[in-house]
Amino acid sequence: MAEKGRVCVAGAGGYIASWVVKLLLSKGYIVHGTVRDPGDEKNAHLKKLEKASDNLKFLKADLLQYEALCHAFEGCNGVFQTASPVPPMTVVNPEVELMEPVVKGPFNVLKACAEAKVKRVVVVSSGAAVDMSPRWPERKVKDETFWSDKECCRATKNWYCLSKTEAESVAFEYAKTSGLDVVTVCPTLVLEPIPAVHYKCK
Image (cartoon, rainbow, N blue to C red; front, top):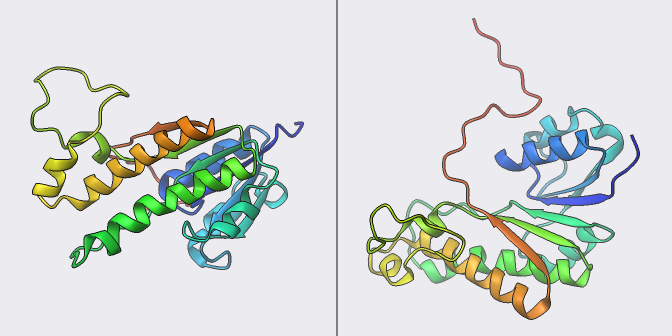
């Protein structure tokens, strides 16, 4: 199968990202997978995927490392931004511990994508970005124009919902000013086995 192009999956070792990597490889893409530690055993399942030995390249990068992201996106037509900091159970300073990395990380990705002239960016957000809406009319469908109520998030100290909502707002504002083609996906509950892992029943 001829190569379709190069695509980067930021946070390739993650749950949803693993399935994205698998699909891209099966379609003939060369995949750049960014991970925090390419040698970490938790990424071993990706190496077992079909065509991974030839078409999957691991690159060390963190969302807060702009230069590393630029290197990872070089030559790529598209980027899937699936990586996101996991919020701590107890947040002492939400602006520093959660809001800053969750918003700044995706912004770095978008900025690096614009620098690398990436054609399209798919940001894997969260249902949290649209779920916190106590005043939303009953039975009215939530569409792409809707986000969680930021003031409600702050009042209830729901920092995760607030951070995801802010991240999406920043993403689309940057898209408007830069001309970058950005789309978001807001998954809720995901239940699937991890790719390339076989379970044995005793």
